[in-house]
Structure formats: C-alpha cells, structure tokens
Length: 164
Image 1 (cartoon, rainbow, N blue to C red):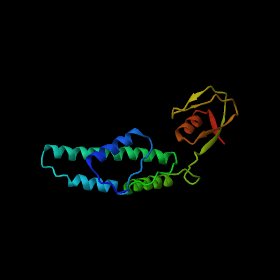
Image 2: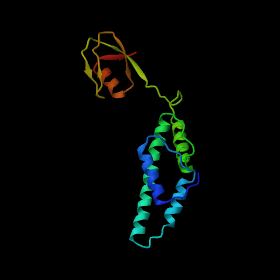
Image 3: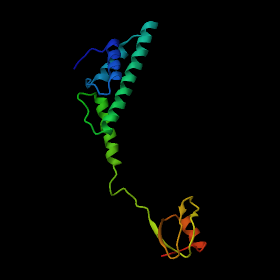
Image 4: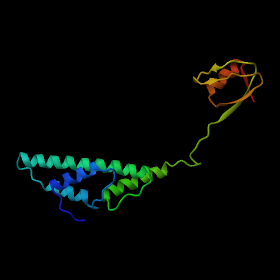
C-alpha cells in the first residue's frame, strides 16, 4: 500500500478517521512517509510554512484519533485490522504487555486480615476512629472486623469487646 503522501492525502485520511469508529487500514510506513513528506517541505514563504505547520497538526491529529481507537480495540479484546503502522503496532504491544503484567490473579490479591472479637455488652452502633461504623452488638456476639489497629484498640480499651 505505497501511496505518495501529500497535504491533500493527509487531510483526507484525517477526515476519514474522524468519520468512523473503525480503525482504517494504513501502510506500515505511513508515519515515516508522512514525516519524510513534511520534512521535505521547504518553508520558503508564508504559505509553505503554513502548509508544513498544518501538515504536522493533521498528522498529530491522525495519530491521536487512531491511538484512541487502538485503546478501545484493546479494551474490548478485538483484533486490530491489518495493516497498521509499525508505530501503532508497537503501541499496541506495549499496552498489552502492561495489561498482562497488571492482570489480576490469585498471586497478587492481598486478602485483608480480619480480627475476631466478642462483645462484652449490648451496644448500639459505634463510630470507630477510622470513621467506619460497627454494631449494634449483643452481649457475647462474635464479629469479624478488619485489622485496623486504632479501631481494635478503641473497642478493647473501652471494654466493648474482647479479642478471641
């Protein structure tokens, strides 16, 4: 898919990307070719300078739009349409690697330690130092609370509960 990059081609590609949620196929060397075209523009006058600036802006907009689409494809587990540029394929691979590393599995889940306490008396609801609420309690009722030291110390020191 070797196409000569021009300002009009960049503009049309950007308009097509904006009009659809689908990731449109582009050549593997699209960004390299586009940068080669942009760097080849000689800013002799004001018009050529504006063309170069606008081409850079259009290319950045194309990349941003396509990057958003790639992330959506990854989030939904959809395969990317081919061909896509080498730069976008690298982005996709990096994001997928990060997601694999941060995947939730049994080895990286830390279970909250619970502490078993028994109430020493009937008690209405109590607001603990952590801001959590506990209760109401009946005498000799066994409960499990998160292992928050300040909450447990409060319940023990005020003779509300005892540790089991």
